[in-house]
Length: 442
Image (cartoon, rainbow, N blue to C red; front, side, top):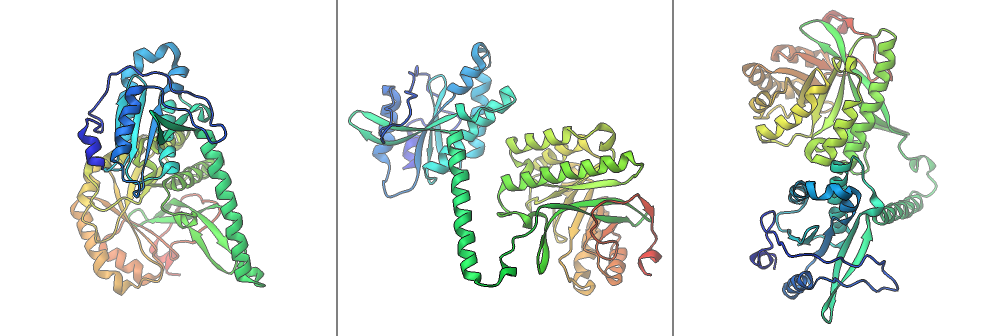
């Protein structure tokens, strides 16, 4: 079905239609009725799509208009229209799946066809594209002005469209989540019965700090920041495990931003009290992967005072194996103006260490799983240290909890160590201090 749509010239990014567009009715849905699409050309195009569409398959069709952006730009619309359409095409290509398609309709509208997504999810994607355009061009977004129209069915010669504003979609989503949360909590309470200790939720999101030992300089000068949630009777949740959905990019970004703001605020207070240390904060690959999230991250990093940036380092988490050098260089380059260095968390068997160097990263970091013995880790860490040394890449190992593991890291030539042996998680970082291996062996 979707190939046949593309066959009519409705290809992504390359096909454009210069037909004039008439205004689509903006009246709200009343008593279940939806306004028809007034433009005969667009209606005909949508009817052809409906004719080829298998009703047993999922998918949806939407009209994404840029009227809200045009109205807010006013007289500036004409000079920047070409740039707007270029940005729109890039955002659509970024957000749509390979099997989806879109085509330009007139001066300020796009028809977007989703092969698998239902109306609710697809509407949000279209609205998100318009929202990002508003932020890029105006510095802020007016969610109430952003409307996406969903093609529902054909009646006579009209294709019926149901309008929905982004503000309404977000309000509905928030209400649905709240309702689902209430239902889930009630069901959990019923299942647990009379065990009150088991129904307690994890505590609020907190930021903790752990010291890092610089092996060569024999000093503890770096403190890693990490989020955590305490759980009654159980071990705390750490980092992205604190999230309801650890794979949700928006939740990941929100956590990264929360941690950076909290940690920088703490570091500034300590700096004013003459404490000196390097602060290492996590930034997830997903927080930089798309333009919208990257822009939010940069806005937060730009708020870090200039005198603090010399004390900032970044842990880049979640980098997928085999990431192209250019893609990783984008991430490292985004962080570079706002800190001293960037370290990338990798698997010890990773073959991507040359990519890290080419992308401008300075340190490769390995996270050891809890309880891993030095014997079991020996082959991995020795290989990791040797490959890193060959590529002139500094190394860091987190999770060093015994003298045996410390000795293995020494044999592997690791430059920075952290873990229970070096120091526990604390609420506030400490002043940089000299620390020799003998101090850890006491």
